[in-house]
Length: 304
Image (cartoon, rainbow, N blue to C red; front, side):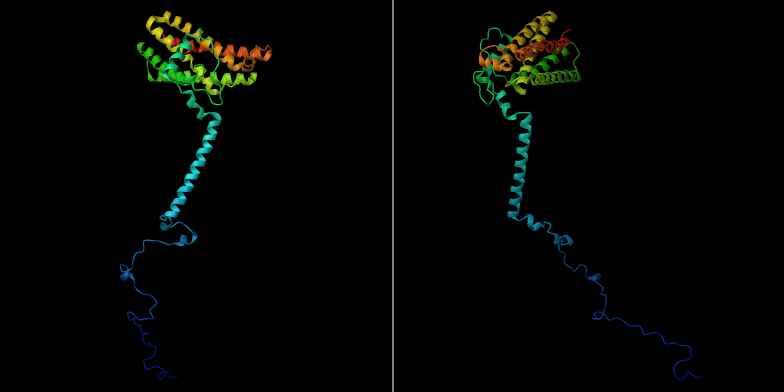
């Protein structure tokens, strides 16, 4: 069978396929080379990605004065509410608003109170004359408790103790820190023990925790006098001065606390007999009686 008429070329030979050449700029191009035009594209600094539709803040919103004022007002409101909550919770345990009354002292009051702590035997009137809902300022009432003298006495006690240790070549920061920690721990234990005793005896008194801290801190005045006397006159001078100060502190505590703990009987002007009042009297005497033990325990090792 002759196939020569169907193809113009020799048998078994195929013509090569025609290659289409693409003319640049022709509209039928599927892809264009844009690598050469990268520099010509303008850069947009504001990026609006997929999150732009979700209502996230843009730089323009934060720069709006109205939105800035609203944010500041909202932040101030939150800060004010937080401050009020903190103040209320702190005042439940530590009446910070009342602390200013305990430091309202002057030079005349300090001199009179120190003289009362060392020589309480001639003082007649132990009642607080100005009784109000708020604590009485000590500068107008010598019988009112304060925190200035206990705080200054505590610091002075540490300074005198450090000086005493230095004269004996035993001073070190660690020992002074241990001495301060011991004194503070015993003070806290004493105050909590008194609070627990008042609760168990069910005493209806106007004594507060700060009052108890103040009364417990007055002992440091006698401790300072005892240590200074020991440094000046030796061990005998220490014992004589400390014994005098211990007796003075006991008298001061009994005459002051009996009007606080026995407030009901004092208000009636008579001594009401009974088991409860006897317990209150014993509690008053016990609080006063432990003061000399603390005074000796915290000072005897400072004198050699």
